[in-house]
Image 1 (tube, one colour):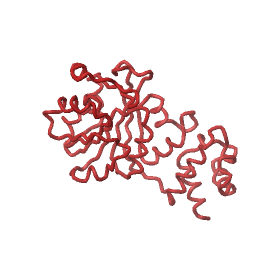
Image 2 (cartoon, helix red, strand yellow):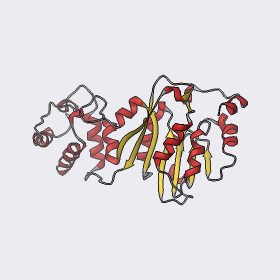
Image 3 (tube, rainbow, N blue to C red):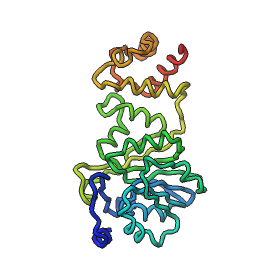
Image 4 (cartoon, rainbow, N blue to C red):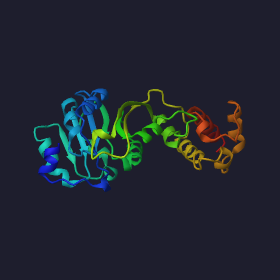
Length: 272
């Protein structure tokens, strides 16, 4: 990788949050733990110098990769010249029509495997969910702090609305810790690879729009309790559900399990 970066006089760009993973053991480990096979279409976001892409191509049926930085074109082209199962689109993933992009592929499993640009990690994950891509698994490298949030436990300070949303769709676990020294240039933070598998036991939510709004509003002001964050809701119904769990309206959102948000949402829906 280093030789090609020098050959093409590549300059790292802060605006794209470019930190390229250089440790081959970790790259191999990511692909191995992803359990990719020849029935899998892999979406990669942020190709960089194609270090991960090369390993993905060895295992996947096809790789569809997105890269926003067009100055990487000659490097990526040279790195992937002998790979015939990869397509790299030089566009902004957040503005792309991914559903249309994957139409031409046949596959039985759809995975997202990527070393995500840290400055837009959350918007990328949200897009994958909001676009209804129906991915079977997401394996992504993220900033350690963000990984802690994704897999946070109820009652911890990292637990937030995104934690609830992700756990609604996926079973989440951290699988690899990665030192900042594994990147070029080295970032100021350590990283973690997180696996999100599509949950088999989907929660019985009657009105998803109401459920997501309730969760967002519950966490609106982190230091405020539910009574203050949910003033516009029917507090009597919320109080009734909470009392079943020996809780009251003075509780903060981070103390509620996802099942409790589901129950409150379904009860509120009954009286709408």
